[in-house]
Length: 146
Image (tube, rainbow, N blue to C red; front, side, top):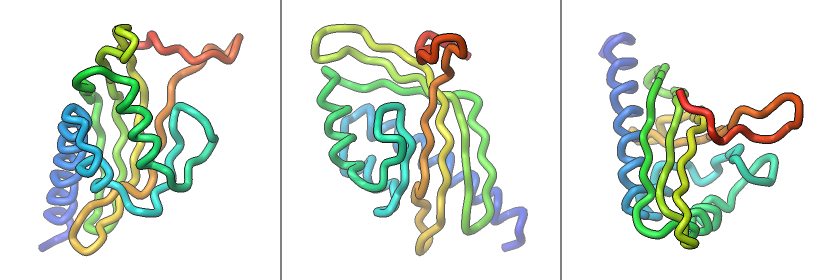
């Protein structure tokens, strides 16, 4: 397989991983979500701490427990760059649903993910989720839309 074909195949596999992760989140399938991450993944999430080295399972459970029913997601402006060994993607992600308190939740944010091909399987080894902030008061701008 030449480099161009390998990169196209890797890009397709990364896009499938993103779609599969969205489906797993919608179904609240903890195992299927976690199966897309490396065991030593480092994440920069919206909430503290500044850097997460582990604890993904607990954070995922806490996030899932804050919603009633399905957790809906869509991604847009997805860009993927890949070789046969490493890749990265960035996109805008919308998440919406109903909180356990009955409140409608709906927000857009930015996601950048880094992947490594481990034994023929793509795993997320780093993920950075961010929200734009108001530069005057430092508060997150959760009402932004693409």
